[in-house]
Image (cartoon, rainbow, N blue to C red; front, side, top):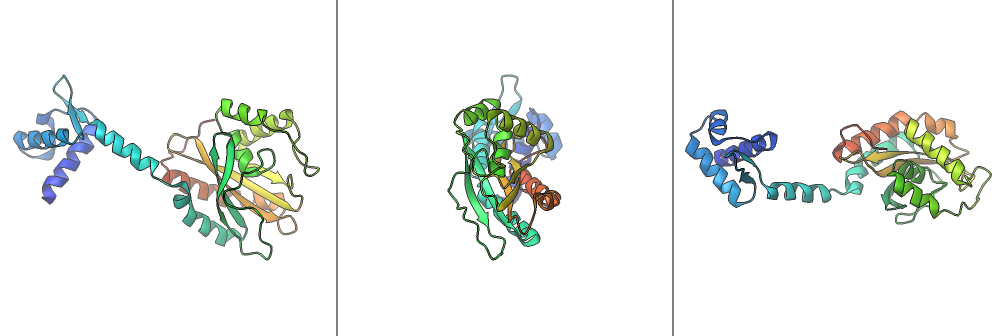
Length: 251
């Protein structure tokens, strides 16, 4: 049984690389052509292989469907959680994980940094698009149409002297974020908090989530948080690669 399973998996692997003839598969696997034909017929019945008009075999549509369902089942939060916990232990500040849903950015996880002051942010809340670093990072890397729609909904409420209050300012900020790859919140919603954030990419290079490090201004300035960029970017890369990212982002 084990050898049959191994052979079937070898056949699938070869079909996924390029169309194959039964004779070529037999030579590569070192088995008789009739054995390969039986494997192909079984795989065809289950939808894992299909025969082209040329007589060569390729992967079946069921295999593609299973692959897509498996990818969809990956939870960003589950993938990210252990990496965020390790990063939190290293940096000692509160971490947030957020996900972009259409034009909204929602906090989906939070790891407290162990300080004496607990951040008031909560999982499930929407991030302020024109102030929160993680929201700016995600919208900056969103498709142009999504970015424009998000901006059209903003009222640009001013919270502190550093709050962005116009389309022109925010557009310049987005351009800067896309160029350097990270965003900051310089006390833009609460003047006693600073934050730095980076986007997390999926297998298509899309920014589907973001990680932020938040600290009291009295403990860490924006300049100090920027020193942590290699750590947060390293964590971002680990999470992104588990989501299938190849290292190239779309913008």
